[in-house]
Amino acid sequence: MPESSWLEATSPAFRLMIATSWLAPDSWMDRQKLAIRQAIEAGPDWTEYIRLVDRHRTPALSWAALNRIPEFNIPEPVKTELKKRSDACRMQAMRHSLILVEVLKAFNRAAIPVMPLKGPILSFDLYGDVGLRQSKDLDIAVAMEDIQRAQACLENLGWRLDSGYFPLSPRQRESFLLHEHHLGFVHPQGGCILELHWRDLSDTPSQTTARWATSISSIWQGCSYQAMNPIDQVLYLCNHGGKHGWFRAKWLGDMARIHAMGQMDWDAAVREARKAGQEISLLATLRLLELVYGLPMPDLPEALRKKLPTSLIDGPLHVLQAPEEPEERTPVASFRDGLRMHRYGRLALSQRMRWETIERYGYCRGDFHVLHLPDSLFWAYAPLRPVLWFWRRVIRRGPTGESYKNDPSPASSARHRKI
Image 1 (tube, rainbow, N blue to C red):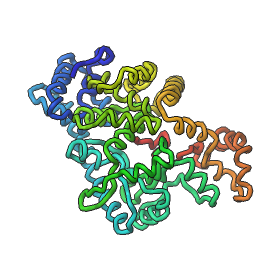
Image 2: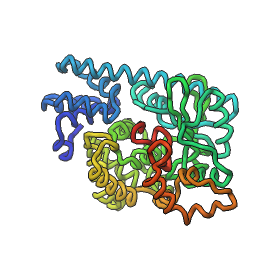
Image 3: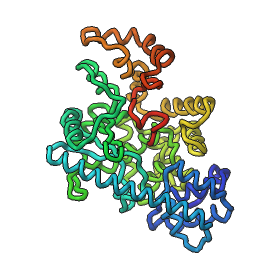
Image 4: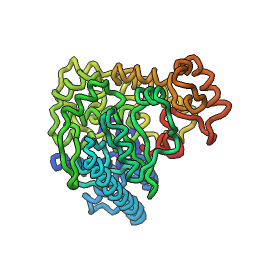
């Protein structure tokens, strides 16, 4: 796994975290082992390494990757800490798997088509092991017309909408479904979080319909579900990592595994990405895989490569190295990261996604909570938004002392955010 000049300029602990943030397939195993050896021989700060593993959410992957080279004498306290984190990751993955099976069975009984996103099934698909990827919540998708039935199905299982949600009038709910993309649920036993999606932010309605139409009927643990086709899954993972600025190595590690397995038709993926307005996002991801993991860029036309601005790579490489979580950064660092993400979004995201980002500045579900207008006066929210914003952010800051967000679920607040 050849190291780029960018990676060589980072600390040995960071290089070791990158080298152990995925499990290479057999064809790339020797190069992964070489990268691990070189990072260990450089003398990593093991405290920094463990902190980076925590920050990038790769405990089970990192422990498994290090165990591929048993001859290296890793300090016993480091082994103890990593194994403890790996075991906790695996235990949580098993709990999530059992919960997901229960949810899938209920949806099967109710004849609601369901599409799990990421989580244990992605871990199994990529590694044959549900316990290797760390996930803090469960994500499933249904068609928009099935939202109410899906909500009732979850509530019958004991799930409840989290405290950030409140009753909406028909017009308010219509606006909510248009501008947002999921409902957040919390299970009373154990507090597991589940997000019920009806679309991806980067999709047009026709693209959402096409994703379901080209999905693959699959079986997992005796439960039927719809799986995205391989190209749709790649584009979904690119957009998920991209909209978060690729600040976690585990997201790039997923893409590295897919790329290194050599089963993706990248020409076909680029064609589909172009149709969806996500071509630059896909190219940026492939370039990041080349810089971070040494994976070669696919043999794409030179004219296509020139479409990728170099400035598009700088932001993700910067935030990837940030030692702290986004919500822990100083206001100045957060402002700079925001500018980088704005530039990334302007250059990489689809035109629809950029437009929806602008639209979301003019929408906040919290407005409906601050001012209860009848549907006949729903139009009045638009001219009142500056006043409502000032009320939420400056005067009231919400009933719990925090301002409402467009996504006020526990998973989206600074105190609870677990992506």
